[in-house]
Length: 297
Image (cartoon, rainbow, N blue to C red; front, side, top):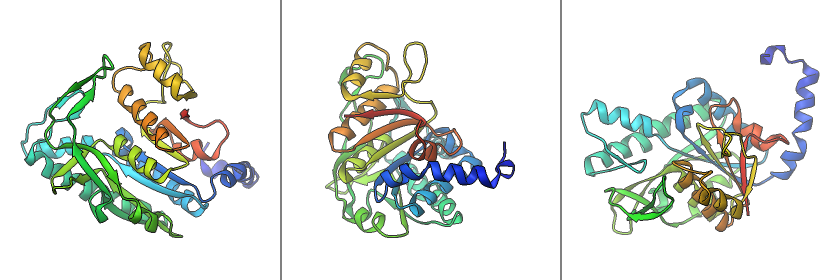
């Protein structure tokens, strides 16, 4: 059914049913990590931008953190720069870092800003460098996606958040109309630039702001059980148990670990959901049934 086929009565009913959720999230900070294959679709980008604008107009304070792995890979290929991955993360030498920053803080960031503005919002493009928002440190160890064990690794200029200064975000996100859109690039205390995994970056931002919700938009429905069915809700303890018994495996392990860390920093709830689903953000926040896996303390 298209929007033109929905009657005025049905539209009014849908809006009325959203009222309890709007009251629940009034003035709440919601951090949305936008990434995965959904970023490659102009149609989904427009829907995502519309969702973010609606959240802002409805009294929430949305903050967008975005990735851009496929776009970085495409640019590296165009420039004949070879790219290597270890445990799902791109090994980043200095030449690669220059491209990463150009793509993330440049074309992708400004494209999302333009899409939100085209839907009536007022987005502001930033990176972790702006206002010293995020201080990074070099990643020296990773959790193995297959075994769940931590081991030493050298990925070059790949970092993780060491500290978040929330002052810039308090000013922008707390305004009546501005929407921050942040690229996961940050500098160390000594001025070196680092590429940071977007999930990790979003988790650190959400934790520093003690966000009501952190939404991790990805390309799977959420956390699946051993029968490949969606698990709609988990506690921290249950999530750790699912990692230990092998239910959560591969690339989902670091994603769930990010959720746990964000919750331990003070985020009320984290949701892993499919960004390819039309209006996934609104489905999760403004309906009773949600749209992915909710992890809570």
